[in-house]
Image (tube, rainbow, N blue to C red):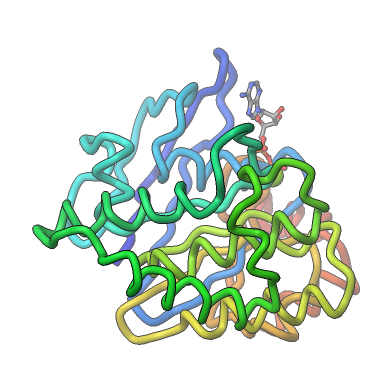
Length: 250
Ligand code: ADP
Ligand code: MG
């Protein structure tokens, strides 16, 4: 589904990704771990097409298409969705309008008509219930005055409504209490399917107790230094990242 090959990315003249390769198949959940500043957020930002990142070498393909040749909107329409590490506030724009506009943009790209209002409300209310969110959320401006936990839930709500092919989640566990984390994890797990994949950045093994990944990768100094299964996350928790660096340098 997603193939990243020898990716080199520069931000403001500094090389951040230094030959990163990664393959994600449909149906899989991959966790990316690694020390602060390693380039984890940069990776998902580049895949999603955020501004300010210069790809100097390598390639990204998504279902055989050259992602780097696609505009941001095309990437979103193809089903690449990035949940932000620090979700942005959009004052004055109601949550419900953003959700509907995003969903209709996708439908349009697929040659479908706009979703009828009653059908949309039914869909959103079902997903709200799943995330244990109050309907008043829909009428609030996007992320304005949301608590950290509410922003994360809202992010997952967006995902549940948009049903991306590849969801990229950056630190969805940061700032969540244990109950909120379980709800967020349930949301992500409900999206797991044969035709979808999830790429998630996390610092904490704990989240992976709830969203059990198929693969765990350690991103150190702009490269995937080590990959393994869920047990690698446990090993990282007890041993830290230093040994991975030493091993990969050897
Ligand atoms: P991680 O998510 O692994 O903590 P990031 O991908 O956020 O790491 O950042 C990797 C490096 O790139 C850091 O040194 C960071 O300071 C730098 N960086 C990322 N984005 C920017 C930016 N927009 N401007 C300048 N430096 C950036
Ligand atoms: Mg980050």
